[in-house]
Every structure is written in structure tokens, then in C-alpha cells.
Image (cartoon, rainbow, N blue to C red; front, side, top):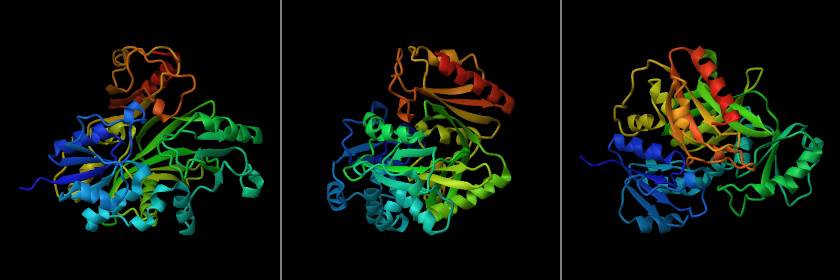
Length: 410
């Protein structure tokens, strides 16, 4: 029997999780890195023990890459990072044309402004936003039909880096003259590094949808509510859990299919974020055409609750392999910790043990780590924690206590 092979293009998001999961299915993984990772944060740099093979070839020319890879054949091409969607689409069209997205429309899947413009053209709910270059005069919000508070973030934002709630002209001016100089995104290019989105500020719950698509058919792995925290106007992850309301699930399912069809995402993974407005309307935040992040923890929650992860969906619908599913017997919640106290972090797993709902702790930093006073975005996460229990009241109580302890220090 021929071994199945997948080509992963710049697999930075949830890399270890993907490597481990594909190995469980005996699927060979070849990771192709076309980006210089020398200046990447440590948590994104590929460990040499990940995947079956790693190839570093710093080119985004599809013909050069094909020549370098030789006579290799692949059964699926997977995009692993939102900044390199164009080359992933081009290689998908070359190696697996029957399961490829159209490279000509890649901007609708990679450029957050173009993404929302596509939704607006299709008459779908979207966020009103303005594309601003910091080399231009600061705009007047009234002329943009926007008002304070507004929301500002780099066009190349990843992990909430540089995402700010802005409440006045003075704050807007400070953002573009001072604050924007203090953060850098690994998704920046020469074309987008000076471009920012100024958008309407939307208040409401946040929903994340993880999917796998093949040949234009979309399969949903999870629909989860994500709860944020604000620290000095900076948006931080709080916790996430499955949505159980049937009407909301149906509404979200219909909306995500419309979104993916509109932006031309016919094949591959997607991690989509959207707002749930107080009036019940859904509005897209962004689609990330890759596997869900957070070290695979959103997918791990799905697995613990007996569902199909994104990789389970891939092996089922692309390769006709029966997924390995757990028997559902618990409800779960994922928590994101930052160690906001600025105190040294020691023995996190041991200290979390006093909450009996804690079933997994993934500490991302070394013992003794102190959070920087200049930090606070998704890249400054110190740990991902999963809680499991038979009673939602227990999860509520333990979540509140753990997040409070995260402020006080560990």
C-alpha cells in the first residue's frame, strides 16, 4: 500500500499538534519552509523533530520550488501560515489540481481588507473598515462614516499584535506616532507593513469556527465561543468553549459556508473568527486559511468531547480513512494564561493541580519567566490550559478562579 503524503507550506500554526496527529494516521508529512525563520519568536521556530521531513528553500517562485522538490508527489497540499497563502495555492494547483484553490483569488483569503470587500460585494454581513497608510495624513473619522470608539490593527496583524481599541483623536494620533513603532508582525511584507485597518468597533461575543473543505464542500469541526479580556485597551484571549444553542449553531453554519464560498476557499483548513452582535447578527472578523492555532488546543477540546478535529475531517473526506474518535463523556473549556502579575512563573502545572477540572497544561515559557511590561498580545501567552468536567458550573467556577490567579501571580 502506497504511503499517503501531504505537503505542508510553512506549517507554523499548531506545528507540533499537526505533526503528532498525522503520525497517528501514518500519513507522511513534508514541511516546506519558504520563509527565513531566524527572527521568528521561539514558539514559532520549527523544532527539528517535527514532521517526517523538513525542507528549507527560501523562494516563493512556484517553478523553482517544484524543481527543487524533484519528482515528489503529494496527496494534499496544506497551507500552514496566513502570510504565504499565494504560494500554497500555486503549489496546490500544481501538485493536486483536483483539490486546489484558485491562486488568482488569493487576496480574498489573505488580505483582510479584500476579504471584507468581497463580503460587502456579496451582500453578506461584514465590518465597516478603512484601509489607511501611515504615510498619509491622519483621517477624520467622520469623513469615513466611523465614530469613536473605533478599532485599529495592522493589515498584516497576527495573534492580535497591534490590535487596539481607540477612543479619541489623541489616542488615534498616539497609536500611529508612538504605539505602532513598538510592535512587529511576522506577517509583514514590504507591501503591507505601513498599512492599517481603521474599523468600526464591534461589541459582542466572539465565535470561532474551525473547518476543513474539499472540492467546495465545507465540513465543520467546531463552533466555539471565545471570550476576550481587555488590558489597557489591548485585546487578550480569555477562554473558549463549544456553543450548544441549536439556533445559533445553524445560523453560524450557514454563514460560514457563505463566507468560505465568497472568498473562494474550496480546499483546506480554515480558522474563522466572527462577532455575535447583541441583536443576534453575525459579522466576520477574519478567515485564517490554516489549521486552528493555540497549539492545537481548540482541536484538542473537540477530541476530548468526542468530536472530529480538522485533521480527522481531512483524513475522512480526503483519504477515506475512518477517524479515531473518543467516546464523549465530558464538557471542556480552554483557558489562555499570561501571568499578568509580572512575577516569576514557577511550577504552573503543580499549582494548577488544585483545580481538579484541569486535564491538560501546555506551558510555553521556561520556569522563572517574567512577563515583559511592554508585552501583551497573543504571542505573550505563557500557557494553554484545558478544563474538563461533567458540570458546567464547575467550569465556570474554576475558570473565574484561575483567571483571577493569573492576575495575582503563580
